[in-house]
Each structure stands twice: as structure tokens, then as C-alpha cells.
Length: 296
Length: 304
Image 1 (cartoon, chains in turn yellow, cyan):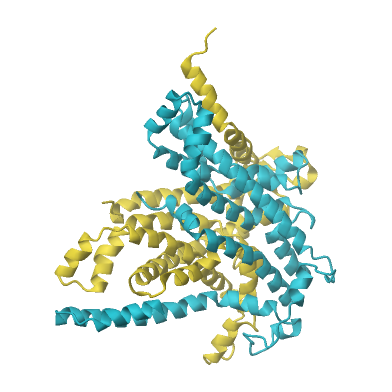
Image 2 (spheres, each protein chain N blue to C red):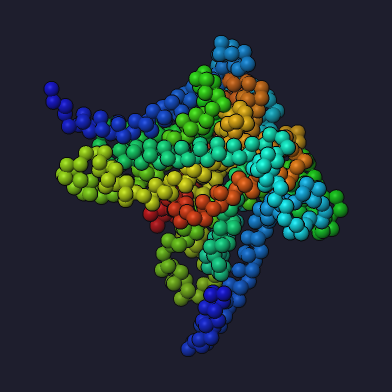
């Protein structure tokens, strides 16, 4: 029997993707499907596999009465809506300014990029000390004449802003890198035309640069939003969600629910809320892009 | 100093148009002002690293002394000796050297296999017309949106059932398949002209030889970019290591550091020496391979 050519191609094709596909099926597709199942159960993992009992949608209903979950959801929004716009906007301004005016661009960009490639645990430990009563930030605020500076990470109202500042610092370098390579591929015609018309630099920035970079901005808003919604390392090291509920975020709550209390079903349900919220927000952003993103 | 001279010579050349001359002076003034401002900002941004470095050389008592000595007037290498356990100097079981080795091992394996599986599958998706290719690829893409935390609990159960808990396999097995990597490599292979591959086929090369001898050599820069990104992801992976690893023998750097602050919260100098030791190799790798790294990061981001 002769093997047809298409079948031969199929065999070769699947041989090529086999290692990849097998890994994908075992470590992505199966866990995703299994996670859906778990999220509809009550499952105390300390009681073993057999304690898994279906409670259908109960997890998804009960969670709205759980003040820790609600606080975590709100805090995750608070964190993301502060970090994403600030990071992207600061990066945009800095990328343009560095590209246009700064002498010694590479070392400056590298310095700003350093936090991005660093281990979040190491960074968080340093920032814990930066914020400590003996740290440089507290000293700096004191030198400005504030007699009783807040206890930053120990203060219910200041803990989240403190983590937000740290996260902007950690993420801005990546956005600068992406913007920089976008700026370098911008066409110059429009700038030359604006030059002849006598436009000021500020006008050029708002009327030409921002619109032309809008696809990049869109990409960065989407990706940094997805990343910031999954914030974990900073929270785990710097505050563990405290004080009170003030810095509890979704991933940290999933982590403690699953691996400190072993309530697997409930934790899985919360992780799906994380996905659903991300999905809805990405769809909204996708729809909204028509209004402000210009592809030329 | 080179740039300064350039500016001076530019300035020294009188322009025939006074208006342009004025504009040039204005630009140079702006450049100086912005360089200063951005320079100060960049310096502020590396202050945490300087603090880390300075504390790593101090003795314990001086770390939290006020006002902060940014440059300690002595060079104390004991912290590093303790962290790396040189001459059995570690007072307790720190094992940072072991964690460093573990991280290096896991990240290297992930990098090699991640790039290999991605370039194999990327090539197949881009150039081999097998049935079901589009459906499988679409399935890949559809899971890219799902955050990894969703699969954390099932993976934990899976590893527990397979008795792999606490071993490096928990980090290596999921790590050798990267959807993003497959996507990036596919995008790259799409750009390679079909004629090149057809020519190889006519010369009698099978798909594997075409892949290995014709296509991969062209793909080297893309593979280097991907390799650096996969290595960095793996090196910095915290949550998975925190959940799947159980004791100091298998700890990777992020969990080891985490453990450090649990055990020796007052000994900041040791923690800082450990942090410096954790960050330093990454900075070196990044500085050397900067070009590839940035290219890899921006590959998916910039249209074109």
C-alpha cells in the first residue's frame, strides 16, 4: 500500500509539533479543563482526592459575600488602574524626551530597564527596606519637614500606593524599550511638514507623535494590564496582603486560599474570575481602540 | 566626552541662516536641560540598587544606621562569604550557592528545550501544510489569554498525583513548552521565502534536514532573542517555585531569597548580599546580549 503524499506531510508535521503539542496538552489544555471542573466543587485538599464534591455554582455565588474576595477584586482594580496609565504615560514621555534630547541615551535607557530584568523577590526586599523607618524614602520625607511620615507598608491607606509606586518603577523600563523601537521606525514626513508650518515641539508631540504611536500604546496598555492584574511577587514579599485587607489582590488570595487553606474548589473559582475580568476588559479595550488607535 | 566635542564643533560652525542658528542654540540648551533632568531621574531609579550594593558590604549594625552611609568607609566581603558559604562561614544553613546552581540548571534546561520545541513547532506551523495545523494553532492562541494562575491548582494536583512535588521536573516540564515562543518562531519562519525551502526539497532534503541545515542557521538571531527571554522568565519564576518546591535542596533563587527573609529578617546585610548575587549574573547576560534581548521583547510589539 502506498502512503499518500498528504498523509506523509501530516506525519512529518505532527512529528515536528509533537514535543510541543504533548506539553501543551498536559500542562496547559488539561489543567485548564480540570480547573473548570475543580471550580465547581468543594474540595478540601487535606482530606484527599475523594473529598471533592460538586457544589455546582455555589463557589461563584458565595464569593460575593466573602469580604476578602471582594476587597481583593477591588484592590486589583485599584492597583491596575493606577499602575497601567501611569507606567505607560511616563514611559511615553520619557521615551520621546530621551530619543530627542538626551545625550548618552543608552546608559539612561539601561538604567531604567534594570528593574525589569531583576528578580521581583530581590526588588521587593530592597523596597521593604527603602520604605522602612530607617530607609531613604522615610528619611527623604522627613528632610522635607514632615515630622511623622506614614509607616508606608504598615499603614492601611499608604500600603497600596507604596506598592503602586514600586511597581511603576519596576515596569516603566520595559515600556520605554518598546516605545523607543517604535519611535525609531516612525516616518519623518509629517514632522518635516509640521516644521515648515512652524509647529512647536509640544504641538508635534500631541498632534503627531501620540497618534502615530497609538498602536504601540494600545499594545502596551493591553499587555501591562494583563500583567498588572496578575500582580503577586511584590504583594507576597512586601505586605502579604496586609495590613487588614488593604493590599490583598486576586492572585495572592488564590495563593493563600489554595496553598495555605487548601480550599481548592474555591481558589479555582476565584482564578476563573481573574480570567473573566481580564477577558471582558480586553474585549472592551479591543472595541474601544477604534476611537483612538490609528493604523496608517 | 566625545559627544561634548561634537556639540562644540556643531556650535562653532556659524550657520548662514541666523534663524537656524538661534534654533540650534535653543535645541542645545534643551538637550542640556533634559539630559540633566532625565539623568537625575535615571539616577533616582537606580538608587534601590545602590542601596542594595552598599548594604551588602556593610556589617549588620551599620545597615540601618541613620543617616545612611551610602558609601561605607570599609569594604567588608564577609557577607558574600557567608552567603556563598566560602570556608564554611555560614552560621546557619543558607545554601545560596546550591540555589544558584538549581536556578542555573532549571533555567538552562528550559532555555535549550524551550527554544528547540518552539523552533520545531514554529517551523511546522509556518511551512508544513499538514491537516489540522490551523486548528491546533488556534487552540494555542486561545489559551494565551488564560492567566497561568488558572492552571496552577490543577498542576499542583497533577504533580502531587505523579509524585513529582518538590522536584525540578515541576518547573522544567511545563517550562519546555512556550506558547509565546512558538508564536514568535512561527512569525519568524513565515518571513522565509517558500522558494528557499522548495529548493532544498528539490535537492532531496527532507523536512528535518531543511529545518536543521537551511532554516535554523537563518533563524539564529531570533532563537538567541527567544533564548534570552525564556532564560529570564525561568530565572525569575517565583510563584511556581513557591508552590511546587518543598525544601532547600531544590530551592531556586527566588524562593531561596524568600526563605532568607523569613529566616534572617534582621540580617539585612546578608539578604542584600544574596540579592546582589542573584541580580549580578542577569545584568551581565543582559549587557552582553542586549541587542537580541530587546529585539525579542519588541518582536511581538511593533508592527512591521
